Length: 430
Image (cartoon, rainbow, N blue to C red):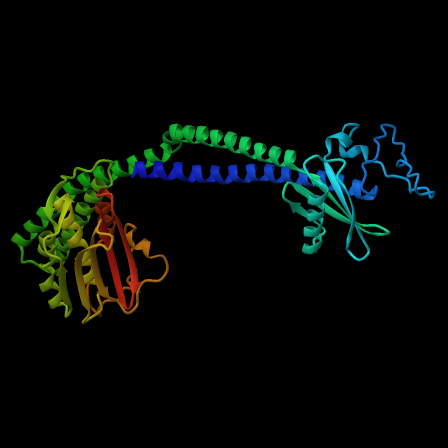
């Protein structure tokens, strides 16, 4: 149990750390990608605003006119300078590789400018332009280029900017951040594993004290019970047995049974329970353990059916498996509806790797809510798991807890479900 608790603590901590790592790495890479794309879009806007050219940088905040075109007597509009606060400088103009496609008002390409890029020819630029015009998009990515469109007096302008360097930077940043995050994750997980024992130490100490208390209390209570039992027998020898002495003896028997099961449960929940693992014929063991309950079921007006596959072998503690079958069968007989059916089945699972023990009983009103609570100590939902009127309830509410401890000690799983008017307990024995 302690190892299971430690593993659960490590797994929960590791999963939480992984979620935080994903959030941090995803966040910083998302911000980096957003900022890179934003800077590229700002550069595209500047080029579009200046009719396909990058303006001169003015460190004093002054504006510069575009070069005059001798073929046009009209003075061109004043160019717009880049905002100094965007992080652009004198070298930005020469570091930015781009080409421009111009169209007329009818959407026909009239001119291209590839003077600021070496990787694209005029014909390729036209193909890029046609692709953007056909798509109808105003911005996006085409191959290695990020593009944006703008309107002019004569038609449209499409600016394509080479983003290979930005893409390589983003990929490199992602790779480095993931590598650092993975290394940090592994390191922290190792520290969690190393210090997990110290973290759960208070819980371990509490559990150990609880086990010692159960064991010590069990042994201490045995003595007064033995004395009470002896005194009761003396009273019956001195005088005739009566309802009071019979009640005392019944309660002594009940307390002895409770102590026996509590001590058995505490023993089963130890880190290394004293189990004798060996190969045995589990088919015979299940049949032998379940068959004595046939008569008990008949006396209660119920029918017990044992359906066991022949010749199945299992490696485990035969005595513990027999106890598991007895607990589940007795529980099914006790809680089955009046005149109901109890079925004990043993078969090989569909994957062929497990031997499944399935004990079911009719139950018109199954328990509501979380059925795993049935395996809790002293938990009994008698209102839901109906019995015939006048039938004594009996039991201590820890039988299923012992069954769960037996299954877990064999590194297997046990579960329960309500299905088609039946309560079904299944132990998947690995």
